Structure formats: structure tokens, C-alpha cells
Image 1: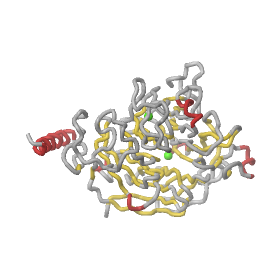
Image 2 (image 1 turned 90 degrees about the vertical axis):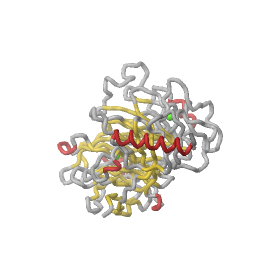
Image 3 (image 1 turned 120 degrees about the horizontal axis):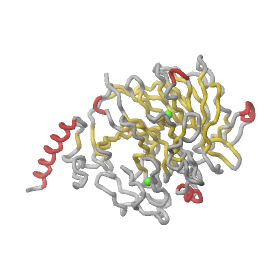
Image 4 (image 1 turned 45 degrees about the horizontal axis):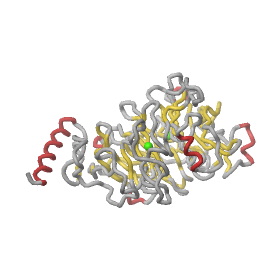
Length: 439
Ligand SMILES: [Ca+2]
Ligand SMILES: [Ca+2]
């Protein structure tokens, strides 16, 4: 049989399977077959990524682990700029009434109304220093945020009972003895939503370190009611071995109760010398965490050059950094002593070489865009785009890049109660965008 004929037969087969599954039947790949139905088949579609790889000698563990098929959902949408002039917004968190909580990295938390009216900074958060502790930091007895480098006020998440308890959780880089560390605090919005009360820090990543890099940190509540926190490796090479050790929080995913205590069923809770909050280890810097409709946690992490990766997170597992990883040093040197696969370490579900520089993620579940249901959306910082992944059977079966014409770093993406997608851009004149079906 000629190749074209084989591809034609494969296409019909895949279309039939796709229709039977009722999934992604609206996807159109640029050529014929995807790797979806048969993970062992040779990828014969046109991949979205065509630029040279930084580490071309590294081979994927399975077909489709990188350079997935380009797909086009043929969805027409409008982008409305709801708000401008935000100062490096890091998180957009939709409120049940259609408004939004927005964090700005220098240390402000605001409410933006559904129509885009930008509220005054909410009081009582925590005082903020630029690269250190401001005069205001010493007042009130609350720990200061240090807004140095990648640090500052980072993510915000609503309590699972927000409509009853008005409680929110936020992550920030905290100035402490010996440097800074990622911390998580909780507090209750006053009824008028102008202030926070009953503020207390419930988690402090240890040890501290004196730089402004790789703090993580997304917050996501699981269906189990636990708070999951992603933490970075603090970048510098002397910290890397700590990522593989359980006596510290660097490069870990953390799982805590809403009061900050460690659940007894955490994988290392009873292991001597291990931090009881650890859920998984071996991560580099994660700024994306999202639960899917089945209640499974997925994260996307900043890898080294050519090593950004998507992982499906499972209790107690080791995701490899910095001994098992794709990619190379920013200098172009190989990662010292690292391999791309090893027994006992998790393969990423997907990796990008070149990277997207991921931040913020959301599985789409709404009604506004039926063609996007089940897809994972990921913000791209350096790549200045919104990445859409079609996923089936724990494999990426298609990739599309959206909003590439706007030239802005995308820091976070969330789905609102109206089914629209909301995006904030990591700029000093940052924006909040609303993505709706084209009118
Ligand atoms: Ca958030
Ligand atoms: Ca990994």
C-alpha cells in the first residue's frame, strides 16, 4: 500500500474512533493521523512546533510526548480588555458573583468587577517591601512580602466554602531570617470586601534562601478539600540536591489542610526526617496547577532550556529534577549527571523544547466553548501566548497556540462562572482579558 493510502485508512479509522468516543471530533489536524488511537504508531501529523530543539539528541519516551499534532478547534472568539494598568498581575481568581480577585506582584490584592471596574487595594493583606522590608512592614506584626525578582504577592485561591466563609488563601515570598521563602496565608474578606481580617500564615516553605528566584507557587484546592501548593527549587545549583531530599520543601508539591496542618495520609507524614506536608518531589519551578474533571491534579513546570513539562501528579511520586529531566542548562551545557528517563522517576506526560515558559493553567469545563471542553489551557510568559492542549487517555493529542498576535506575557488563565476564559498579562501595564464566543 502506498503511504497516502495508509494515511487515508488511518484517518477514517481515527475519525470513527473519535466519533465513537464523542471527544474532539471537531478537532482538525493539519494532515491525517494523530497518535491518539495508537500510542505506539509513528506520529504522522504535522507538529505545531517546527523550530529546532535545544537538545535534539534527547528522544521522547513515547510518541506524542513532545511536538504534538497541530490542531485547530475552529473556534471564533472575541477578546475584551476588561482592565488595564495593572502592575504585574500574577493571578486572576473568579468570584462566584462574576467579579474577580486579582493579585499584583508588588503586593496588592484588588477586586475587579465583572464590568472591569478596578477596585482599591484590599487592606490588611500584608505590608510589602521592594527587595526587602519596607518601613510599613514592621507595623502590625504581620510578616512582610518581599517583591524581589520573581517574588512578591503571587497566587490567590478561594476557600471551597467561600460563599459561606469569605475566606481566601494567598501565596507570597516572605522576607525571613536567612533570606526569603514561599509562604501561604489565609484571611477572611470583610463583608464590604475592603479589608482582610483574621489573617495568619499557615505554611512556610523551608529553608529560606537569599535570592529572588523560583518561588513557585500556584494554589489549588482538590476535591478532597486539601490545599495543594507548588514550590520552586530556588534556582541556584547548590539548592538542586535538596529537590531530591525529603527534609525540605524546595521543588515539592505540598498538600495541607486549610488550617495549615499536614494530613495524616500524606505519603511521608510518618517518615522520620521528612517534611510531612510533601505530596510529590523532584520539581523545578511550577507556576501552573489545575484539577481536571476527574479530580486529578496536573501541573506544568518551568524546565531548564528545552525542558518545560506537563505532569500528572500522583501521591508520593518523584518527578525527577535535577537527576532525570529533559532539557539543558541555559548555557547550553548538558544537565550534569542527568538522564531523560530512569526507573522510579515519572516521565512527563508532555514536554516542550523550545519552551513555552508556563504560568497558570485551567481545564475548560464550561458551556460557552463546547469544542474546548476537557482541554487544558496554559499561559505562556516568554512565548507570549495561550497554549491549548487536547488530552486523551493521559496523552497530549493536539496543541494549538492562541492570542499570539497580542505580544503580551500571559501569567494566569481561569474559567469564570459564565464559562468565559479570563487571562491576566505579566506586564507593568498588565491587562485582564475576557474571552467569549464571537458575537
Ligand atoms: Ca489562583
Ligand atoms: Ca520531570
